Amino acid sequence: MARTRVDFYLLDTPGESPALMTACRLAEKAIQRQQHVFVRVTDARQLRDMGAALWGFRADAFLPHGLVGAEGAPIEPVWLGVEVPADERLPPVMINLDWSRPSPWERFGRVLEIVPAEPALRAGMRVRFREYRKAGIEPNTHELAPRQ
Image 1 (tube, one colour):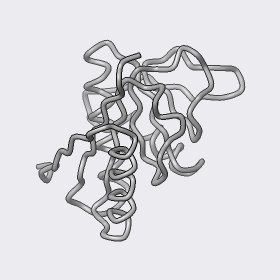
Image 2: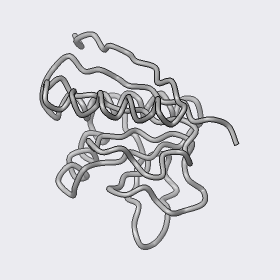
Image 3: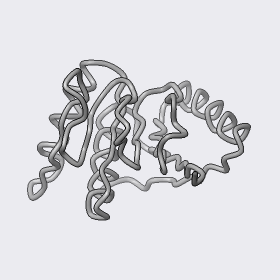
Image 4: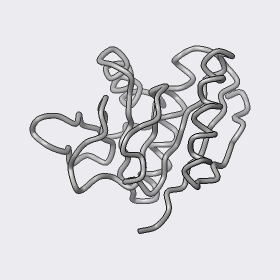
């Protein structure tokens, strides 16, 4: 099995909205590459907010998405959920908006970690960065410039 690639995207603006918009842009890039993506959220509120963001993050874009649930995996290119789905047809890409390390992250070809600008949350993400290294993964980091 191929080794998982992990990328950390460092936000420059505090708040949840920049994280959601970054997740939308990353999901759009994955779809453009014909890849399905799982967006892992923290809770039901963030699940709702992420769904709304995918509907209108750009005036000229809509990203088809569905919720991971009891019925199984959605057929849409973007899957939303709180827990990593048990479905064997897991998408190759996971965008993680939760502040805990996903399990089992090793089942994905790529894990995209959104790193908030808030110092206390960044400290937790540094711990996760070291955890990936301990697991033999050398994460990539991307500092995101402010959006115009």
